Length: 243
Ligand SMILES: Nc1ncnc2c1ncn2[C@@H]1O[C@H](COP(=O)(O)OP(=O)(O)O)[C@@H](O)[C@H]1O
Ligand SMILES: [Mg+2]
Image 1 (spheres, rainbow, N blue to C red):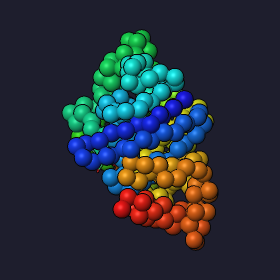
Image 2 (cartoon, rainbow, N blue to C red):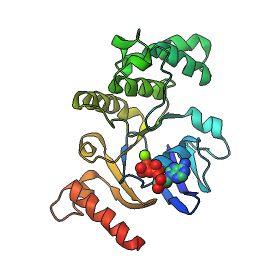
Image 3 (spheres, rainbow, N blue to C red):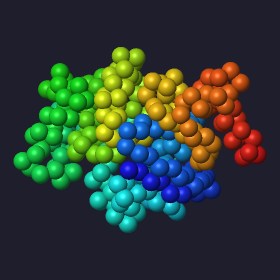
Image 4 (cartoon, protein in one colour):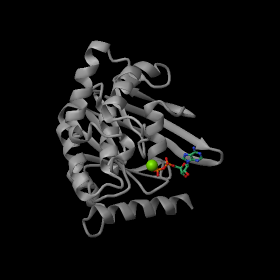
């Protein structure tokens, strides 16, 4: 469903993404892990078609984000980092606006908005302005926007960042419900949630993939059998290689 081919991006002299390739199948929740500045958001922005790659391509359901951007984006839901939203709108107003922008047929918009509101569990705040909502609810409104057109591929950039434990659990439950029918890529710099949420994990550091496997396989790369230990070791190695 997702075929990432040698994506590269530099900002001036900074090589943010240095040839990232992987594929992602339906039913997989892939954790995209790495320290701050590793290139996770930059990679996701290129996949989502909001940042042009210097080289490489991303095929979404077989469509190139570089040469067939609109068609590729139709199969994709993207939650950007920090999820900028429209503070003066209520969630249904925002979602109707998104549905129009997404060119969902007028006759299908009402159902799509209602389904997204139910799936993201934001029914109770539907009458409030987005600007007045807690961070957890705002993030879930962003998620509702990402799943509005029921895309087969989801890119979620730090979806649980800044949420309290209950809100994190709610977002994790939503991801688990969607997982069987979609291919989901989730970036995070916090490791504790990975075993609960992801069936596979990629570790990226300085724009390079340094590991790819199940959370259990990654944990075996440490001395103490922990994912944290493996992460430290892998990112230390990347630091040593960069010198
Ligand atoms: N628009 C930009 N202009 C300049 N540098 C950028 C820009 N976006 C990202 N970077 C740099 O690219 C690197 C990777 O950033 P990012 O992809 O946001 O990392 P992550 O999401 O893994 O924390 C960082 O060094 C960051 O400072
Ligand atoms: Mg980021």
